[in-house]
Image (tube, rainbow, N blue to C red; front, side, top):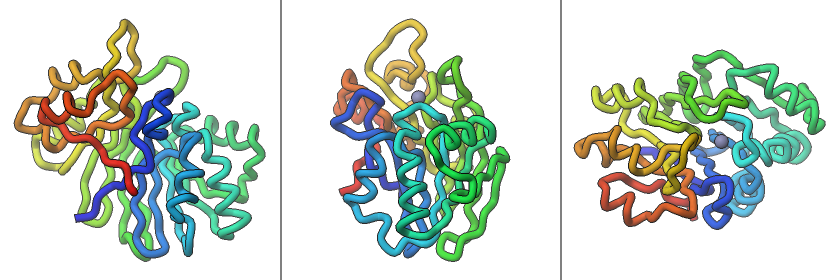
Length: 237
Ligand SMILES: [Zn+2]
C-alpha cells in the first residue's frame, strides 16, 4: 500500500529532524503536506521537483515551520517548472494575505478553501480531503484533515494540543487505517502540542500500532514512543 513519505519529522526547534512535512509522489504528480522553512531545500535535494507536472499542497496552519518555504515552492513551481500548484487551506484571507506580503501573485496558484474537497488527478485518481479544526494556538486557526488517496484512508493531525476525537472514533471503527499525530516530550501548562503522556491516555493499546508520531521535539525519545506501542513517522531517504 502507498504511504506518506516524510521529508522531516521535527518540531519547530528540532532542526536536526527537519520541519515536519510529508509527500506522496506518483509519476508526475505530487501531494505535499505543509512546507516549513527547511522543506523547499529538502524537496530539491531529493529531486522531487523533477518532471513534476501536478502539485497539490495542503496547509495545516501558518506557523513558519509549516509555511516558511511555501513561497519558494510556489516560485519554483511557477518560474522553473512552469506549473500552477493547487493549494488546499480553509482560511482564504489568511493565506492570501501571507502570499501578498511575500510577493506570491495570485496567478501563481489555485486556492481551494472549502473544508471538503474532491480533486481528480491523472495519476492519483480522486483526492478526497476533509478538514477539521484542531486546537493548537489561540492566535491562528489550525486544521487536521482526513485524506483518501489511492486506497489510503488516513487522518493527519497537523499541530494540535490533543488527539482529534472524530479521528480517534474513525480509527476505532476502521474508517481510517492510520492516524498521524503531533507528539512531544515536553510537558507544561498551556502546551500547544500533544505530549506522549497525553497520547497514551487517549489511545488504548489495541489501536496504537496505527498511530504515527511526528513533529517530535528534543525532549522525546523514539524508544519511549515505540515501547508505548506507537509508531514513529520515518524520514524518506
Ligand atoms: Zn504550529
